[in-house]
Length: 320
Ligand code: FAD
Image (tube, rainbow, N blue to C red; front, side):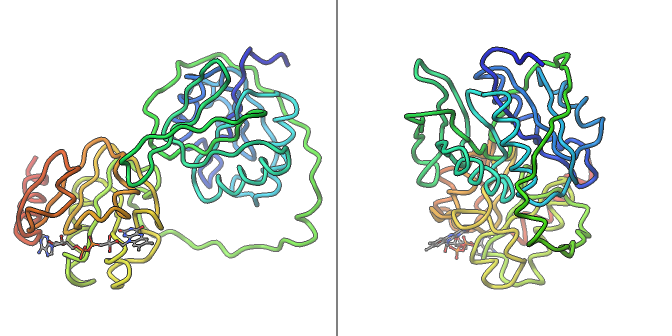
């Protein structure tokens, strides 16, 4: 298959069912800003390849595997796709699995690795990754001095969407590195019982902090999240106090999110928390301390007690 000029190789995100995950649209949108998106689908359904074209892939490569495949087979497929396409850059989601794959590809191919980009662009030298650092206080850029960069893109950070394309699909022949079969065994899957959106990549996030006071009272965060159809986040203080498991921690040492709406309840807005949410499009803060630093970055702020304000908010939302 002939690839378009300036190809940007995108590793598609998949749902456990093998369908294309919605987050792939942002990756393809980012790729379209700097070249022609060529999407690799590893272990997806036939519909996943078609959906990639709808999201703007100009060519689609498919490789066999399970949607929740181990990392190494995905890296094998990505490396084969890289050799075949010779892209100007490789874009991968900045999820835990994505960073794992990206790092391994960069080492295998001796490529520069840029993680947690909130945008990409192209200048005379090549592809540039943009990063939000020090709690979102500064925007920096990184560009490789050699080769095509491997870039992990923060979920939800890129709004751009590519136009649908009529992409040719090619099945990729992958030579497995063989390293996995000998060492890997089955992994127990932990069933996710929540019907709420996943924190990573969610369009709306409601987060609670130490101000909630106890695990029992943290249910208020869940109630507002459910009224808004939002994912649940938390500050480290809330996680450390056992209000909610660590997987919900937002911030420097937790998850980075870039939702359309971020609601912070009883969170002071320490720089380490801001590092993980400052790129949210709209920030709403409710805190009883009018001097709390969270108000410095909030688009809408309410100085008040969460136990008074939030029930009224939920009532108003449910009355709509
Ligand atoms: P607090 O700072 O105690 O704030 C609680 C807020 O609740 C206060 O502003 C208070 O006015 C308000 N409040 C109290 N009661 C009410 C009420 N009834 N109604 C309304 N408001 C109320 N933190 C993170 O969040 N994520 C990280 O990833 C992270 N990583 C870290 C990494 C390092 C290396 C370090 C040193 C720290 C890190 N922290 C992180 C911790 C961070 O510095 C803060 O301690 C933490 O974010 C504070 O959480 P908080 O805002 O919930 O608690």
